[in-house]
Image (cartoon, rainbow, N blue to C red; front, side, top):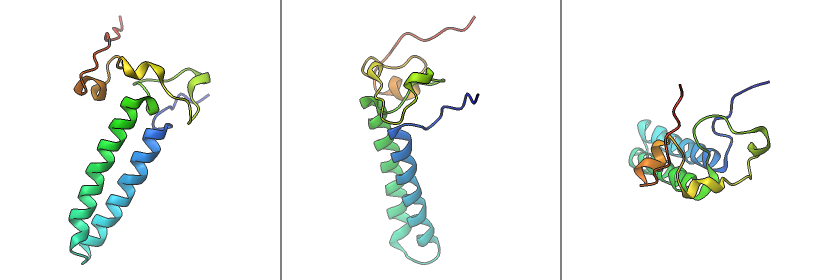
Length: 103
């Protein structure tokens, strides 16, 4: 059984798609289409912001592996409003859940 559970969320897929479009536009800018570099960089910054907003809206996931029943792509995370423990994105948004301590 695989324990891999990164990016299998709406936030992950949307962020990846926007980032790929931004990289493609920036690549066109490198080979000669002048506005492509700035447009591509702008789309990549937009990808980060959209992914972060979707994560905060519950379409992302907390750090770590989710239980098997909560791994579906369309399953929203109800705990996102309070913030995820040990989550940098939630911390910079001002959502401070109690950190999980491993002993």
